[in-house]
Each structure stands twice: as structure tokens, then as C-alpha cells.
Amino acid sequence: MLKYATKEYSILSDKFSEFSNEEQFPPRINTNDNSVPEVFKNYEYPVTSWPILINKEMTEELKKLSQRLPRLLYKIPSLYFNNDIKKIADFYFEGNEILAEFGMMCHDKNIQVGCRLDLTYTEDGFKILEANMGSSLGGWQIHSLESVIRRNHPELRDEEKSCNYKTRNTLKIYMEYLIEQIRKQVEKEKSTLNLFIDMRDIEDSEREKNLSFFDSFYREELKKQGLGGQAYSANINSLELVDGELYFENVVIHGVIILALDVEITPAIFRAFIMDKIYFPDHVGLRMLGDKRNLAILRELAQSGKLSPGDSELMLRHIPWTSPVQNKATIFKGAEYNLPQLLKGNKSRFVIKAARGYQGKDVFIGKFTNDKEWEEILETALKTGAFIAQEFSDSVEFKAPNQQNEWTPHKLIWGAFGFGDFYGGVWVRMSEVKTDVGVINSATGAVEAIVFEILS
Image (tube, rainbow, N blue to C red; front, side, top):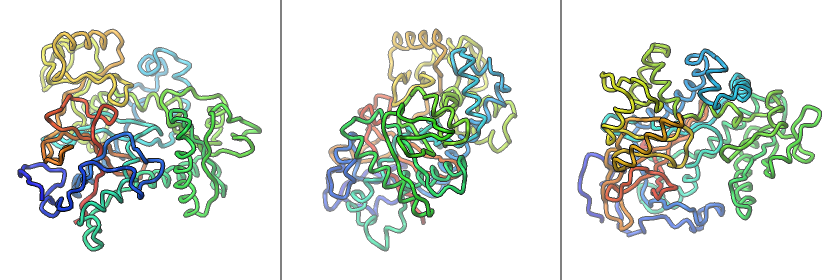
């Protein structure tokens, strides 16, 4: 049995005494296990053999945030910019009014787009660090390792006890949501729904396995709904608009998703989407929805009374102080400051990050940079106008096993999935406090973990 120093926070919540390591399994999962799908053999990120356990209260809070915040993002063009194309172009599209027109044309179709909130759990509860929008959301893969984790722990594999611990299959939930959205967008009487997936960021040698994996989930959900169809993947330029329908070879396509970032959208896809022939969540307007400066806008809308009282309270409680980096006056903790001077003189209290960054890139935490680096970062941010400053929301320290299976303090980042009315669950990245470098991201060395909800 592992020795454990009791502390207020543990990844096992209040259930540590019910879990043990008598079998002395390795601290990290072997993803070559027979129960792991072929596509995830040799998974590139380390995954802890222990689960994260959360109570009903945390589950409900994550669910509410991941469903409510995306809906509020859709309101920003009208509530904040009054649908003014020039203002929208200047803010999101580097002044390109034609792109802004296209973006708003897509936005006004009001289709749902998948979201993953990245949050940290502080002494004051969950704080939203960013909202990632679109189809290229990572983290859903972790559920494929559920069987390995359950096998390690008697509490999770025992038939009677295991029903008290639930984990959500994010990909399965997403497929149900995806098919619902395709049916909303195209003619509902269609009995066949074909999906095209742009996988350009996936290596050629792995693409076929990934497509087969996605296709199996997609077909399974179609079958449950009494529908036919399948998923296809190829060069996105192979899609053609013929007689008002989008075709891949001789197959009509009803939905297109892009598992890559900053992809140029082809005219055929754009036209098919505008004509309501396809569900296409990764449209031009996604550039607006996914901008990290939106968190600052939501706080401003909440403070000015432009959101409902309930939404205002939710946003102000869960979004930390956030502002675009500009040479302007700002209010922080009830006092007025010049923003650059505030950031320069209090770097340990703030983070500066790119408005459209991803995978922990271009994220600078004042606490972990020296004065010269921080001044250079601030200068760059002021020149480009494409950065935000955010109050540093430090994770509480959760006891978790390290590489040596010793229980030590860790900091966690939570990724909660919202697909319209569907809550897709949450997954965790964590980093040992003694090796903390600020940014906790799978691509920068964090350990991933599966989350189980305690049902009673």
C-alpha cells in the first residue's frame, strides 16, 4: 500500500482509502495493451495509471460552464460590436472587411460548434483560461484507455462497486451530437448521411487507421438512429460542388469537419455550406468564436449589464480578469491603472498569451520569466495587438502519483467538452509541482489522466 500524506486536495477526492496499489502496477499506462484500440498504440503522451475522481458538484459546474459559455460567445458580434463589419474586421480579421463579411455570413447561420474549455481549479473554484472552438479539439482520446485504468483498481473493476464511478465517452457523445447537427442542417428525410474528415495534420501512415476508428464510431451512431452512411477522408480539394451538392468522387457529402488549424476553406465547401447542403462547423466565422480576447469581452458585457443576471454572475465568477494587451487604462481589483504599467510592475500576478495560440504556444507566465523577458514579451504584445493579459489563476495542489509512484503535489488543467446541449465530459493534464514551469500542456510534457464522476 502506498503511503499517503493527507491533504485537503487529492486526485482521488475523498476516496483514497478505498483505492490501493497492492498489485504495484506501473505509474504510467502501457498503451500497447491488448485492450487499447490499434490507433492509440504508442500514444504519444504519458497517461497516469490512476483516475481523477470528481464529485457531483464539480461535474455540474463543468457541465454548466461548457454548455453556457459557447452560447454567450455567439452573442458577442451583436452585443459588443453591434454587427458593425468594420469593427469586427479590425478586431478579428486584421482589417479585412471582405473576410469579416464572409465570417458574419457564416456566423449568422447560427450553427453549433464544439467547444473545449481549459480551466484550472483554484482556491476560489474553477477559472476558465480559454475556450477552444471547432473540430480540432484534443483530449477525447483518453477514454480509449478506460479499460486499462479500470483493470488496475478493484474499485473500478468490481461489478458492484464500479457502477459508482462513471466516465464519459467523449467521442461517442460527439458522434451523437455531430449527426444531430448534420440532420438539422440538411434535409431531415435523408436516410444516408456521409461525413468528410480533413485529416491533413495526421501522418500519412496513420491516416487510414484514424479514419477507420472514426468511421466505426460514426457508423455505429448512424445505425442506432436507423441511418446509413460513412466517413471519408482525402485531400480537401477533391470535394466538388456539382448540381448544388457537395461530392467526394461519386458520393454526396452532408458534413465536413477539419481536424487541423488555420486551414484555407475551398470555394466548393463554402458555397455548399451557404446553401445549407452541409454541416460545416469550421467555417470562416470560427476565427471570431475562438479568439481568446473573447473572455475579456464576456467579462465586459457582464459588468455592463448586457448579459442576464445569471450569465453575468457566472462569467464574473469563473473568468479571471482578462484584457487585450493595449496601452490603455484598466480597472484591476477595483483600482484604475495604466495597463502596461500594471503588467510591468506586477508580472508574477499575470499571464500574457497569443489571442489565437494553441497547445501552450506563446503563453508567458510572469511568475516563470525574468524581468527582461517579460518586458520584451509585453513590448511584442503591445506592437502586435494580438495578445491578452490574464490574471494568473494558480491551480491548487492535488496529491497524485509521480513517475516513481510517490504521492506528491501536482497542478492540474481541466479540459471540459461542450457540444451544444451535450456535455462531453472532462479530461486532465497535470504536472508535478517540483518540476512546474508554468504551462501545463500535453505537448509540453504534462501527464494526462482520465476523469471518473463519483455518482454517490
